[in-house]
Structure formats: C-alpha cells, structure tokens
Image (cartoon, rainbow over all chains, first blue to last red; front, side, top):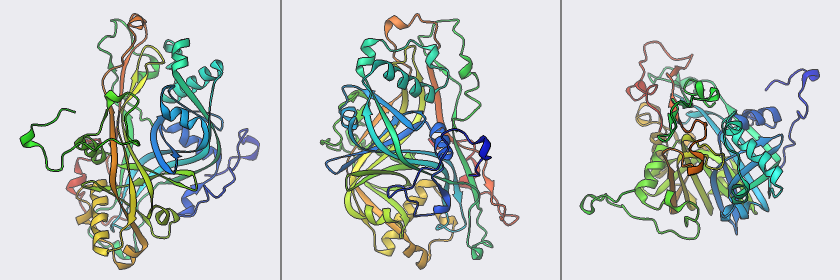
Amino acid sequence: MEPTKAGRRPKGSSVLEPKARTELRQLAARGTHEWEAIAAILDAGLLASVGFSVDGQPFVLPMLYGRAGRTLYLHGAASARIMTVLGGAIPVCVSVTLVDGMVLARSAFNHSMNYRSVVAFGTARTIEDPRAKLSALRALSEHMLAGRWDDVRGPNRSELAQTAVLAMDIEEASAKVRNGPPIDDEADLPRPTWAGVLPLSTVAAAPVADPQLRPGIALPSYLENAGEAGRS
Amino acid sequence: MEPTKAGRRPKGSSVLEPKARTELRQLAARGTHEWEAIAAILDAGLLASVGFSVDGQPFVLPMLYGRAGRTLYLHGAASARIMTVLGGAIPVCVSVTLVDGMVLARSAFNHSMNYRSVVAFGTARTIEDPRAKLSALRALSEHMLAGRWDDVRGPNRSELAQTAVLAMDIEEASAKVRNGPPIDDEADLPRPTWAGVLPLSTVAAAPVADPQLRPGIALPSYLENAGEAGRS
C-alpha cells in the first residue's frame, strides 16, 4: 500500500508495531501492518471468526462485528456462556477474510487464492453503560447495512438488557493481501493447461420482502441497488 | 433436518454425540449434530477459520481445506511455524460459515443473519507418508475446484517436501442453520419499516486468463459455467 502524501495523511494513521503474534513470517511481501489497509479490510468484511481459548481448548465462532477507530464491537445474547467468557478479560483473536478469487496455476503447487485478510488481537470487555451499549450496537448495525439503524425500532430497555455487547481494543493486527494472476514456474508455461483467476465475490440478490410486509412500504434507498453491487 | 428412511440411510450416517464443547445452548432449534448436515456445509464451504492456542494465546487463520469422511485436511508451507504448531497434537477448532443473507426485521433486536455454519473439534497430525500426502492434497484441490487436479502438473518430490499436510479427525462437531424471513414482535408489524431478507451468496465471475496463457488453450469444462453458478 502506497503511503499517502504526508500532509493529507488521515489522523490516527500509523503502522501498528509488529510483535510476536503478528510478525509476518510467511510470504511477508503479502503482509502489512499499515492501519489503513487493516481498517479497509475490516470495513469491507461482514462476519468475523472470533477465537478464544478455555482451559487450552480453542473455540472459533462466526460473529457480526462493528468498528469505531481501533475498537471492534461484538454482541450476543446476554444469556450465552460465550459472551460471559469473552467478556472475562481473556485474550481474543479476531479474523476477517474476504475471498477474491481462485488462482489457478499450471502446477498444483502454485495454486493459491486471491484474498484480503486481517488477524487482530486484543482483550474484550463487556460494555455495561446503556448509552455506550447503544452506540456500539449502532456501529454493529451500520457495519452490517449502512442506513438501517435509523429506519428500525431501536432496542428497548428489556432488549438492551438481553444483549451483551463487548468491546475489543485492537492491540496488534496484521493484514495479508494477494491479488493478480498465478505465478508459475518458467518450465510449466508451455503446458496445455488453462491458467488464470476465477474471480469470486459475495453479492446480494434482489431483496425478498417479509410475507407479513404491509402493502405500500417501499424498498428503502439503502437497499435499492443492493442486488447490483457486491458486499466487497 | 429430517431423518431419511432407515433403509436408505447412507453408510456412516449418524449423530455425532454432543459433548461439552458442542452442546447447543443458544438457539438450540437452529442447531444439529446430524453428520449429513455437517458434511454438506463442510463441502459447500471454501475456506475454514482454523483456531488453536499457544500458551493461552488464541490464533485464528483462514485456510483452505479438504475432506474425506470425517477427516479434514489442511496444508501450508513446511517452513511455516503454524504448520509445526498445528501438527503438534494440540487441540484444534475448525469453523466454516456460509453467509446466505441479512435478515432485516422491523426492530434492531430481531435482526439476524441467514447462514449455515459448522464448528468442528479435533487434534491435527502431520501426514508424513508421500502417498497419503498426495491423496490429501488431491482432496484439498478437489474441494477447492472439482476437476482441477487431473488437469495440472502434480507436485514433484521437492514441492511435496516443501508442503506440510495435516489431517484432523473430527472428534466433535455441530452445525447451525438459520433461514427464512425475519421474526418480528407482533407489536412491531404495523411499523412502516421495510422488512425481509437481503440474500447474499459467493459467486464466480467470468474466469480471467493468465496474461501468459498460450493461445489456443480452451477453458476447461469444469470452469465453463463457473460464472453462472455460485459457490454455495
């Protein structure tokens, strides 16, 4: 990622110091600790794989997330054991991956994927303050679908109490990106094997109205072009 | 998932015994330990989020995978620290999630996702035998893109030595599936908010030939319809 002009560098722009957890050992040319690259991938993703460990047993669960600056938000049922475990100041790893294509080389060995991925580390804490909870839930909702929050009934006191919301300040993070064609060995180029990239993306189809939708309710503008544009 | 007729039940069909790691506590109605449901999701997925823990620090990394029966295969550079760590008989959690849509309710609280996900637990071991390694790599390749393996140059001895291949027998697994429209509170139904589902899927666009592709090499049949059909 090319650095922007110094004078136009966004506030908070920096390189996250690589430490033991995120040192880029394999294929370091594909990796970066640039915060802008990390944030762009986090914003383009939809689900995170959230990893934690209980008595040495690892768990990985898919969760929606939101972001504000270098803080990630997660939520779940307050009655869920995982939310209590995650809120208990244990180390957490959040992984977000966007798949951009299959890289089809002439040799099995040089096959790869085009992708953008982030691995972020931190410690989650439970947000107790109702106003801070609401703000985090808005970030989660806006991350899922921008414009939706202001269009729906917000959580009431009981719903807010039933929802556990966690904040995880990102202590360390790294991004990896691969794009472009396959890189074959010179000796394989004459092979009669088709080589190239099969582009993949997550796309939205036309919205499907709830069978109980009252007549005369128009599709909101933030969904109008959803069927044409991809998520990433 | 409805059980099939006893007489037509596929060999190996069974319910994986739920244990502490996979007991379905939240929204148990969405969960299953039926092996067929678990296998179908594993086969439809492309990337797994592989979780493990080193000295209490959780790590989650995106990896391609393959499946043969109840064994999952993973691979990576033999020089990669993660492959040594993962092959060291430590507990591993593999999570695969397919996103099928955003569930847009009239209240923020009743928003959800339509998805199919599997969480599987086991212990990975390094495959040393070259023939077993090749067989696992074929499973990985065929999982990524069926038909590709027979079309490419297979790994030579040096490439095989540079590739670490792991096998993880699934000891416990569970699947969760949500589909269908939003489920709103009765009191919210008269609201003038559009409600329904925004379907999401991972789809392939037209294949992009390698700039170095020799003229006259046709697109293989297993890629011909790739741009029309989704991955899941």
